[in-house]
Image: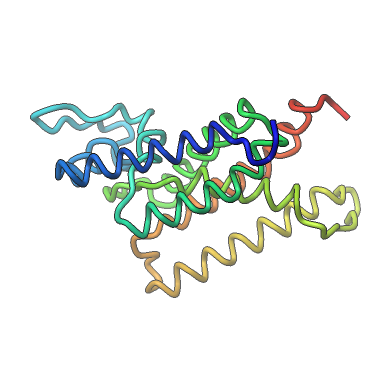
Length: 211
């Protein structure tokens, strides 16, 4: 597959746009966010809001990744998804990309849950999945190298520096938004990014064989 050929990423972006447009036209945005968004407080306390049912809690990290809260939200995520995702799908392949997006979504949801397990605020957007893509992109395409520190190999030192920089950036964004982290799922960004860092080498080995 050539770098510009990215059927999985393009398909995912297209589905996000279609879902956003349909919900906007039908006026079901709020209902969909409540029923299919990731709500930490739902863990162990399933809810049913008649009429209709809630998406099972275990699936909401996936369904929430298809929902967006506004035009700017969907436009920004789609642009980042297509720009970085299309660059990665070439070397990684569609199967590895699917794993990366899936684990990124769940990693982001897990981090958001651990940060505030009692939160009843729905988390939506592809933040976790996109952050995982950004992590792998940074590891693969960055030209900077890091020296080993004691028993820690150079590639792990580099990953740790990237993680520290990303977490620091997210915390700054959160404090800039008022200290309460506002409506931005900061910890989902962190969780997805860490998931991407952990998956980068295993996915490359899976794609090209152990080296």
